[in-house]
Image 1 (tube, rainbow, N blue to C red):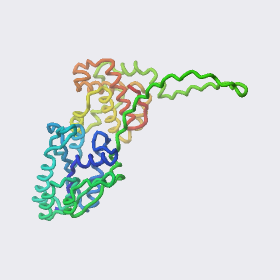
Image 2 (image 1 turned 90 degrees about the vertical axis):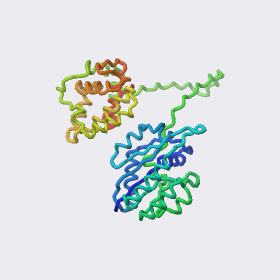
Image 3 (image 1 turned 120 degrees about the horizontal axis):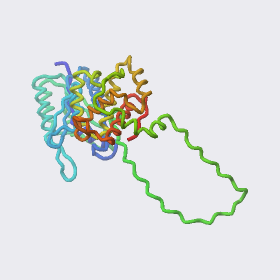
Length: 360
């Protein structure tokens, strides 16, 4: 079958990338754009094999095989299948169990059924050598991708490298298009000890008058954020408001397939009010019809920091799904409402860059 399949050992890919970019194999030190990374893998696989992509298999470990937020995002992407092994802590570090066995079984099954003419492996595990050899016997061309190793180290099995038909390198430039080092947590600046009083030196000339430092001119966003609490708290008194203001609701902008994906992705939303509001706002802005987006965003800008009542009511109903915020009776505290609405504006700014976002 003239098509290609990619098998990704996420532990190898992201662990080796972390070592290269941060000097530590801990994946928590990375910021990963999974959608961008999947697209890069897809484009490169099709280019290097000359075949259309059938599917990307993403193998990873998870505690008790329970999908983590990144797995929930990945498994709803087109042409992506997630397979999970277990993740256990050994001597203070996490180790995957069952991932290599699952990759081996998948590789041999695909080759035996001639599901693809070319298979790309992103791994360094020598345990896959028998699977690679078997796949070649079934007429499959095996492509092995290696992550650029840090400091010239070797991060793949030599036997695996020797057995592959084609070998390619994922270098730093390619990786950092979607994988970057996470921003370090800002450290508090320690208080400086008071300096010993010093004896002023004798002036060598006429005294200089100190010039006053002018106060910075506030921007419109600064003025809006200076006292937004009343508007952010009372944009809507109840959850249901008749949509008579001409602002489309998220529900009307969402297709059935998007609604299914949203429900899956909501499982990875923490339920913290600001994050819930940001998720809602970003979705609404991203789904506006192109021919109406400019006008609707301009109307939203004029209402800032208030949220139009119909859209605000939908935001409250959406937030009520998260038990940590409210309930079906929309018993949402004033403080949570403030953070929800601040998050909404952050989501709009995140998606459009057109509006200032009040801080929470």
